[in-house]
Image (cartoon, rainbow, N blue to C red; front, top):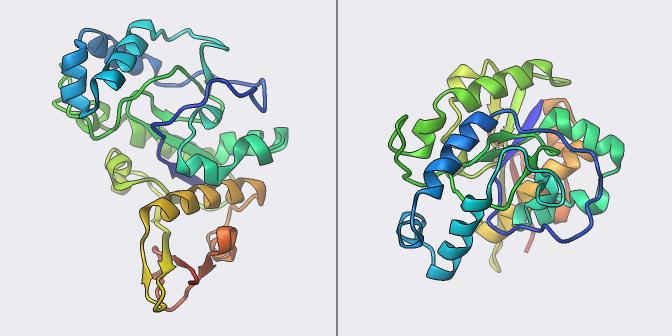
Length: 259
C-alpha cells in the first residue's frame, strides 16, 4: 500500500533536519531537462507562465539558474522536510517521525512533483516552484503532464509491487497532481479519501484548507501506524475527523469533522 501526496509551494530549508539520511531522486535526467528549459526563461516569461508576481518570478528565475542534479545538503534537503505547506503541517514528519518511520515512509509514501516527477520522502530536492498544471512546452510535450507521460505511473507501479501490504494506492493528492498518474496502468486499486467539515447546521462540506491538512495527517498516520491494509484506513481519527460509512463508497471513504 502506498499513499501519494502533492508537494507544496512553501519551503523550509532553514530548520535543522530531523534526519541526516537522504536518497537521490530517481528521475533526475528528466528533472535536469525541465530545469534547463526553465533556465532559458526570463523573469517576465516565468511570471506569465506561472501566474506569479515579479518578485516570485525573480526568485524562481534565480533558483533554476542555480539548480543542479548533484546538489547535496545544505543546498538540497529531503523532500518530506523541505515542503512546508498545509499538507506537510498535517503530516508532521519533522516532529513525529523517528528513523524507523522514515524507513517505512520510503516504502509507503510518495510525493508527486512537477519538477521531479515522483519523490520518495528522503529524496533530496533543491528550492524550486514548478506546479504540475504549468503549461510548459518542451520538445516532448506541450505541458508537464504530457512531459512525464507514463514515467510517473510506471515508477509507481514498481513501487506498489515492492511495498508492504495490499496492492492499493491511497490518493491523497490534488486533482492537478494526480492527473499525471494513469490509474488504469497501475495494476492496483485506487482509493481516494475525502475530508468534510460540518457547518453550523451540521451539513458536511469540503473546506480546502482543512482538507489539505487532513490529507497530510492521514499520510503521516499511515506511516506511524504502519497501515498496510485497506480495511484499517477507516480507523483514521486525526484532527478530529471520523469515518462516515453512510457518505462513503468502497473506493471513496469519507471522513467528517463535526461542527
